Amino acid sequence: MMDGNGRWAKCRGLPGHYGGMQTMRQSISLCHHNGIESLTLYAFSTENWKRPKDEAEYIIRLVSEFVQDTNIRELNENNIRVYFIGDISKFPHETQQAMRDVVDQTKENTGLNVFFAMNYGGKSGIMQAVRSIVQTKNVEEITEEVFEKFLYTGTSQSPDLLIRTSGEKRLSNFLLWQSASTELWFTPKMWPDFNEELLFASIIDYQDRKKRNQPV
Image (cartoon, rainbow, N blue to C red; front, side, top):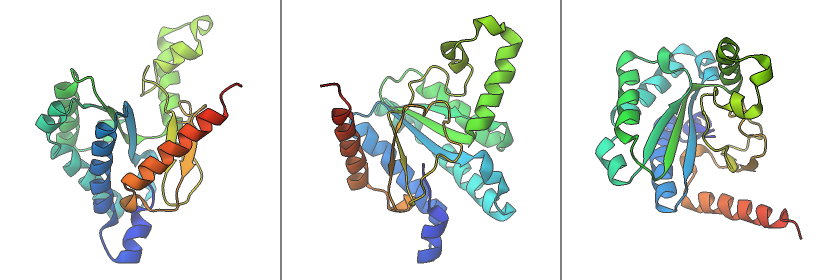
């Protein structure tokens, strides 16, 4: 969870959300080069619409530029597949089209899967799944496995590790269903300061926890 852009910017007098976008690119590269199979980035939440209008519009513009500037050739060369989860219909038309283009042109890649959560909220995702499932399934047919297919994330694997920056220790409506068994890792560092050292620290801590929890 990429938190702390605004506070980072306020302390330094710098554009925090722009810095956060650069860290996002760096994190994708780090995950790719270190054999991580899946990465989900909470890029724009449903709660972001509640921010002051000029701030929300600025974030949307940055997100739009990020998507439209994505180098599809580079993604394909690195075998990275891209997905977008959430209600993207609220974004400008050209941004939606850029999202569809990236998804379509990377769909054959088999390396790192990158999920961008855009206009995403865990509660709204569950509600969307409920609305869809009641139109096609009888109550007796609904199991956890069936329900998961109707979520934005579909049948993709639930995250092993959830990282949140900025020192806040809550899920903030992110992957509520999918994170039922996920390990959580928090750092007081703001998102623009997140780096390779912190990523490795979180992975090592996760591996230590898994070892401790293994049956003797």
